[in-house]
Length: 328
Image 1 (cartoon, one colour):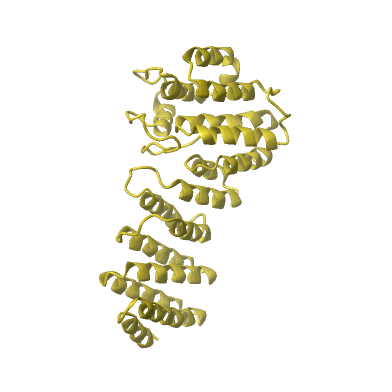
Image 2 (spheres, rainbow, N blue to C red; image 1 turned 180 degrees about the vertical axis):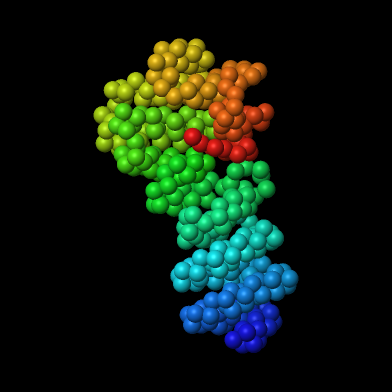
């Protein structure tokens, strides 16, 4: 098999683009036949050999396409280790080429992620590198579209907390709300239906994403079976969030201050709420930052990692800070 594949590969190395693609397809055909016969190890090694040969010739697109099709093939035969390895080579081809971030490439990466074993360490490494590449060197935490696709996969796996993290870094407020309705209904207490959306709204606002904050609130409160139609709402916390979104649009500090004072009983239900609101006050109402955080230890670290420290506040709406974010 190796000799036949190498002959086909040599043919692929000749001539123009159309002929090149024909050679790649012949290589793929030989490799597919080998995998179908169960010669997994030999096929995997040949994929790797061809990858490095294509890369050395500057044929980054051909290398990426071959590794992507190979990874899908190995996944279809439940060869997780080989598939994950070729998936990492797909990323390597992107990292070493001048390929621009495009929706089809993001969808391919999300497809590979969705097929990986959720508990494998390779999946963690893959998503970290994929998000870094998708940021395009901007220092951000990844492309919003990729975050959205990852969030949807994790939602299907009922990994709600990880799904929420990625939705927060997307611009899909509606998808986030629908996931939170399911999360709350299946895993949460009825008495906490308001807290699921309050946390999401406050965190979206901390990331300067007013649009998604508003969409997630409206969609969640309309679709959650345990929330009566509003506004106004039965739950005081929901009324606070509704007023807060209106206040953010108005930008008046006095309104924001009175609002926070009036709803302190509801805000005390989660010690993080007032910390989020301190940040929101800085971003939208001109409140000067505190010199020191009122929290230390793990809680202080969580807050700093969510909100970032010392960054420029003039980032565009919906774009996340460059510091890593952890969600409780």
